[in-house]
Amino acid sequence: LPCRWGRYRTIMLSAAVASFGFGVLSLAVLIPSLSVHQQSILAFIGLALIALGNGASMPCLSSFVGDQLEPYIESVASD
Image (cartoon, rainbow, N blue to C red; front, top):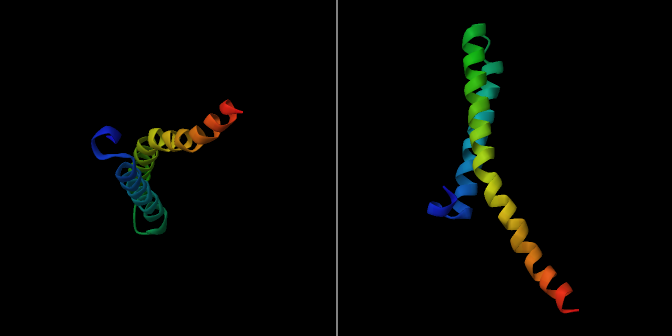
């Protein structure tokens, strides 16, 4: 996914998926007319969306750290 879309788009999409997962997880608790079975299904769907969103963004975020440290490493190596 990151190679095809780029880091910025991947992070934006994965953040949107994770946010939607948090919304689904909140709805599972806030709607009182749902049965326990329906609440658990919504909760697992929400958790799966959160995991998918966080898993897609982690490789991109670690490369951002590498981009920030590269100039510092070069300046320390030249001293």
